[in-house]
Amino acid sequence: MILVDSSLVERKDFGVDIEDRAYQFGDGVYEVIRVYGGKVFAMGQHLDRLWRSCAELRMPLPFGKDELAARFGELMKANQLSGDGIIYLQISRGVAPRVHQFPEETRPLLVAYTREVQRPLQAMENGGSVITAEDIRWLRCDIKSLNLLGNVLAKQAAVEKRAIEAILHRGDTVTEGSSSNFFIVKEGSVYTHPLSNLILGGITREIVVKLAEDLKLNLIQQAFTVDQAYGADEAFITSTISEVLPIISIDGRSIGSGAPGPVTRKLQRAFEELAGL
Ligand SMILES: Cc1ncc(COP(=O)(O)O)c(C=O)c1O
Image (cartoon, rainbow, N blue to C red):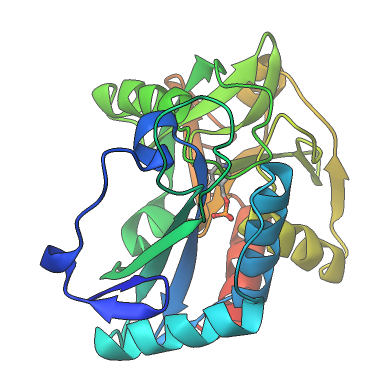
């Protein structure tokens, strides 16, 4: 089953209109929400970010957060999602005859589905390798929009080099991963790019920043260079799917000892505890 606005319908019965603006312009937003053991994790934070993305794109929503959360509950129940998985949702500006400007008469269209997704336990234990890639995305990366071609091309480049992620940089400055936020550890301090139009404010990033505070780690939200990343003692990415995932090499250069470091492990453990894992 999939959720289309307020109705649960068979996936095969849902026809997407070619003039849906998500299809034609990528004119819409999305969220990926984690489900652990059939329970939604950090729903409130995801809905807050969704509302912000919609506001930035001037897409007023015809429903409230509580209403949407309740519909997701029904969707999970209909799909019997009782283990680990995700809820994916996207909201298009709607269907209307094709013009670039906002159509006068259209209403946003929400579609959501669930999928079982296991935790990447092996990569979380052993760490992964990444490449670097020029950040060619637009300048509103803070909006979780459906325009993901820059991210798609970067991730493909990573996969072709047997890496798990592409770490993006604008000039020398590291921004974030193609589908994750990026952190380094140097001399006990943890660094990540500050919130701005150049990165997505990741929910996992937000959680890790708070956990670092609780653990009395010195977390500095400050941009750093690709060379500083190469010279880090530890590195890790964060995302809804990857949680806190150690990075052990960048562009074939070992990071620190070439194994997941103690600060990364501490944050992994704290995240698991918070999420009841
Ligand atoms: C570009 C980008 N940055 C960061 C993230 C991590 O965000 P979150 O922790 O909310 O999953 C994502 C997730 O898909 C992403 O696409």
